[in-house]
Image (cartoon, rainbow, N blue to C red; front, side, top):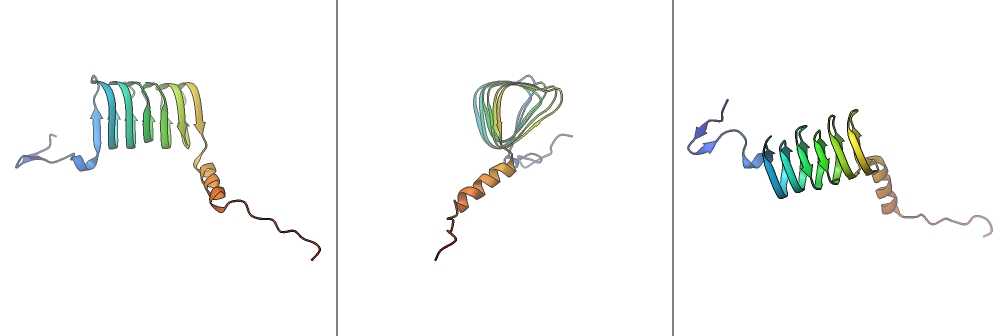
Length: 144
């Protein structure tokens, strides 16, 4: 059940696994910056910045902006979400703010008040392809 300790080293989660946890009942105020995955079940006032995934539990309350690759939330967020990969909002969660992401998933029962920019990966790829090839010159037909 508990990790075993051998020569002052704990077996189980290590710093290499990149998991951060803010437990239920915990309160945090400030800016949280990390790489990897974080799960927030407590309350937080401030900003979250990560190159990874933010999981917000259904008891969590976030007052501030969340910047991540992936955001999965069932909690209450008052602030903006900017995700480079995707955002999943799960019931009974709520969001008051702006979402900017390529992919957005809203489960039935989620409360969302704000605005959203979700272009989809296919459209983003098509735009990137069009930019890389550029406009093609047209050839005139007819008299030589």
